[in-house]
Length: 289
Image (tube, rainbow, N blue to C red; front, top):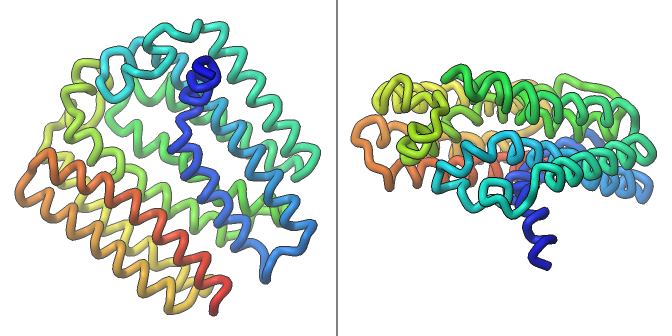
């Protein structure tokens, strides 16, 4: 059981749960009405496949960054950082998990979803982790493209095509990602400084990062209204979006005016609530109105 828990920890379960949740919202919104039995089967298979490939990408990230993780309190507990799992164990686990996920998507969903999911795997596990994260303070912005793909994967799983609605959902996550992670990096700045990663608070300072968080939340407010403007949602979503985006802007403004680690932590936590409530509102709007 201890070994199983170590392998499970490599998949970054809380992150993967959010990924599958966003992909599931994309699947639901792609279907005009309540899913049929066959569509429920496809939805379940897509969730399993996406979970497996995303978990494999997380495991590869843990393997590549094991020395960096060991220097940071937030990540020092990971099995690869502690040396509890060898490189070959982590690599074998990631390879097997990715293969299983890809096979599930190929056989029970469609090749388009499999290809997009594997491309996302490469984008996060290799391009972002190896190329972007250690080289530029804009790593979160550029790398956010991979993290923003779950709704697109979900949409492709149910329709076997890519609609503009899917890209609107992806754009929301893309713009949400920088203020979300920068809030975290503010109160974990010493961890990032010690690790050598060029996160924005390390390279440009606290005030510069707080301004960026605030400006991004304003852009996010505008982007989150696009589903309503485009016509893929109605007033229920619009009201909820204005509320949670206004709350995120409020946290960012308070953070800009007077910084504290406690407020940065609260802003980070609210960002998770923001995305979850926003996508849940899309789902409710889809089925209730």
